[in-house]
Image (cartoon, rainbow, N blue to C red; front, side, top):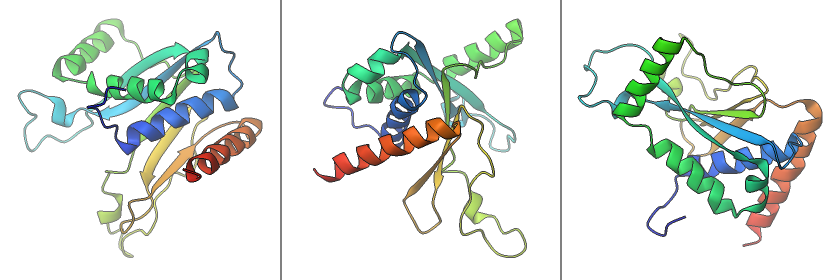
Length: 188
């Protein structure tokens, strides 16, 4: 990674999850793995969307590489890849994506060796009062096998909660891998 680029915590978490998920699923090194990151397109439009606009402005940013690249290249490779795919989301990228979907009537391919990551940590869940007070923790009830959600732990915390769906055997491997990474990092 270039010295002038400081990755966000989301970029680092996404890179780590992409690598460990790929390993936990036992994906062969020669296979292609994909990463889709849901990006809020609202701040990307030029000119900006009208202030009263209501609706989703979500676009998928996309990266792919061989699994061996995630396994053998430095961690900075995955972080840089995540950073670059997030930076490529611009007004023209979003408009091109809309045109592509409209013209080809395609949907996002979320099957196979694809990992989809969505950041929920800035959604205003904790500001909503459902009639019995504000929630103290928000998390999905279930997560599909190829989806990763990153959300805030609570209103008073900067901690993030990662929810991901994996088959049971892969979750056991993932758990060991993440524990190993956390133990390794805590020694420094």
